[in-house]
Image 1 (cartoon, rainbow, N blue to C red):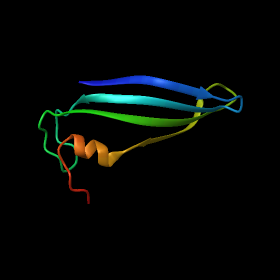
Image 2: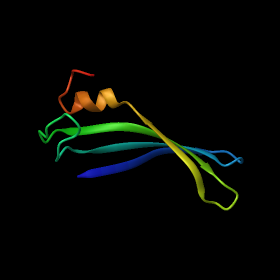
Image 3: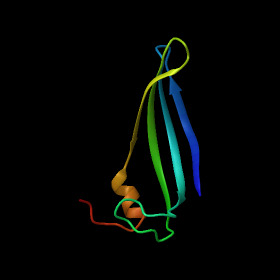
Image 4: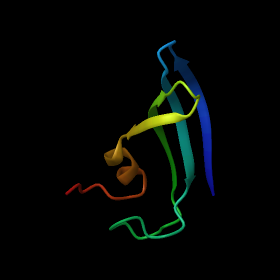
Length: 79
């Protein structure tokens, strides 16, 4: 299962948008070096978007704490 919850959105008149999203779920498959143990995770993400004059997304960047996700899935050693 994978769920997303938009917790806040902020935009300005220049087309810059920031969206805070909480992504939650249960690991069902291998995630990189982490074998699936069926553990739950909840990781906040920040999406930065630039919306052009036509109302379409010109660019998007996403940020999250990968070390926290690894810890929640049971991997405490970070390469």
